[in-house]
Image 1: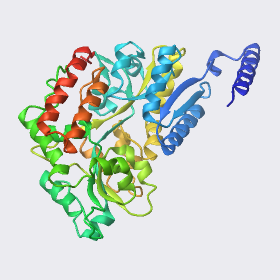
Image 2: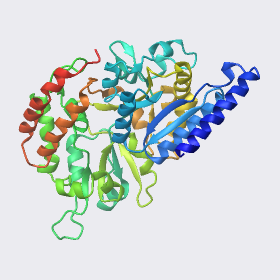
Image 3: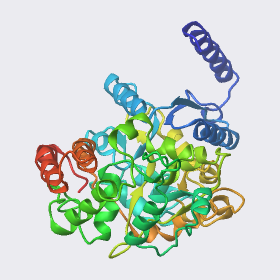
Image 4: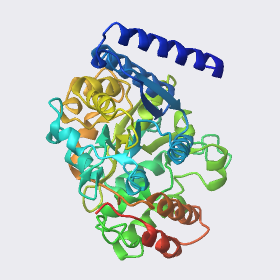
Length: 433
């Protein structure tokens, strides 16, 4: 909409509202202004939110919701930060639990625990406990979790079949994982260059964390009140070395040049990588793949089972002018009907237990065939710390992890450098507890 048409629409809305008031229409029958919702994601996710808003407005004609869609996640975060700084933030936004702490620390979000406790539609016990825990800031539930997810192994069934490699079992081990990736890393035309990799992954602390936990290690000294990274401790360093060896010893991951030329997710979608580590976020776009069939498997298990939580939540700006209207939308969005709409898009693992256990999510006619993996592994999920500087901590650590995986420094050097580079961020960060 251009600026002139926006002004015209505003004038028309003002005149229409005035007429309604003059006719004696109550305040409950017409909203004074729309609830503003800002979202990010691919077109399938955007369309799901449009469907959600349409359903909400049908159920609540007294409230309008205005959606702004920012496709890029980084642009989304930058835009919201800019809007908050300008004093005109959206009423409702969605945040990953790793990212909301900076806003909570500044008092920019309205605590939603009291609203939830008064709700006749949803209750705390309806949600997976770890999701509620992740959005609890200094004793208050700050945002309402919309989903939970975890890291899984997406795999190309056709490449497994062509190589005669068995599909991953639910109880596979680290050794099984490595041997499978090696068997699927192939030079198909015998020119000495790998054409098909067995594995692809983002190289990050978030991807490394579950393997550290599976090995009996920890990534920080205290998840609830972290003061430092602990990748230098023996169990953690051992897991980091195993992760680095995927490239440096086993050669099942692309090198830096190859990854920059074509990232691992694009390779997986193109049928050039057999396995890819990702959360539920990849499902909507992978459902568009027509050149091969795919499925998901749980992460391989080390000394113990562990996964890393991926969770997003609806957060309300403390500056929202009509908080009751904004809450009415958040409440509906997290009802069985609301979460079912988003779940059908394939994007989320519902945080509402009843929806996650329903055919809406477990629909056997939709890929992946075994979505139950996300539900069955929810009990072993762990979280990274909730601290206002976690984004900076992750970013600095990820740079050192990449250098190690690509052979520029050792795993031990990466752990030490990450420790040194993040010390100040831990000191500056405001913690959830």
